[in-house]
Length: 178
Image 1 (tube, rainbow, N blue to C red):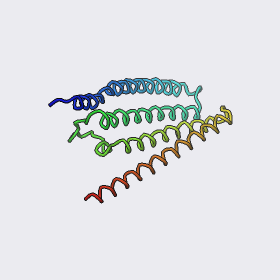
Image 2: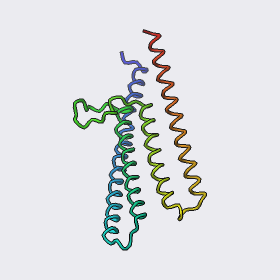
Image 3: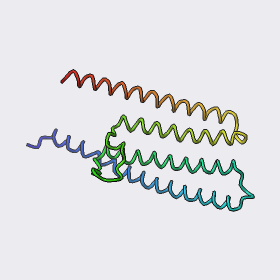
Image 4: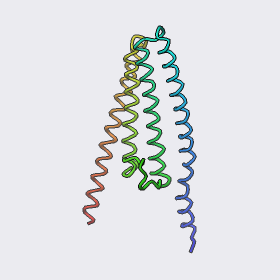
């Protein structure tokens, strides 16, 4: 019997596929980041060949910029792969030699913690770039960057504590029922 409630439940469950184009969009964004990385790398190499126009600080800032792009690309992969696996559909990767180790135990909580950690890493790179280039920045700009970084740290810590508490609560509830 196909009741209206069953039809509604089927539509609601199928609606998760509406997110699939969002993940395709993030893949395109990752391709843009790859292009940006190559452009920045070519600038670094070009400037290094013409060594008279580049200082060690400039090289360090350029390399940190490249690291920043890589870390954002890593963040994109976590969101694309982890989000798709968690919210849209399982990826059939069993036995695949390149299957990420973390994917086997990914859930919304784990994904949030991994994303928070990645954002802190990206923020750290930005902060390091700012400290290296501090002579060219206003003091209030540096202060706000530090404040924002500390907020990221506390937010990640709070999420980790909430996730741990929820995991422990669920484990205790599970133990009571068995």
